[in-house]
Image (cartoon, rainbow, N blue to C red; front, side, top):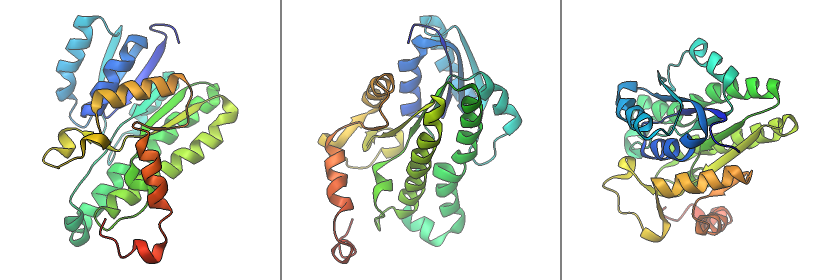
Length: 246
């Protein structure tokens, strides 16, 4: 991929991972669309990109996965070469068990709200027979655990959707990369005690994602140890697994 030849949309650019991905891919961008629920938060990022000369053009958008405007996104999808989707919402499991609005917010922010966005871009790329999609999922989606099964089930849905999308779009030359980071040291996990061996920085996720996309990988475990951990967890027999406090 040569410099500055891509039109790139980053949905969820105000997150730590989203911002790191913007900096990683911006040198290849002719046009950047950066979105957040509160796009004013992205003004300093746009200014920094422009000062550094990292992108030719940067446009800010207000996009909320729960209430987005299809008419706003479709013209972008028609021009977009690469969609990077990094929206995620990690809420309190116990609150979600007692409050349907909380559980609905988790599922919508991590799965059902993302599917229409992905589909809009996928349809346009399929028609042009060109483009790529990168989306951030989670190891939490690989098996339901009592401590976070609302979040995990939403991510499981997203991972399965991306797998099906990759299968569908392959014949059109459109590549879909599913990124499974494991623990990430971000604002969303602030206050949690995370094991250093299993925890990546946002910058590490962005660099690994850039490499994996360039190599047209299908699924990326940012730290490869997670692939083996989840292989073990997925294969624990259910009679034993249901007794475990995970």
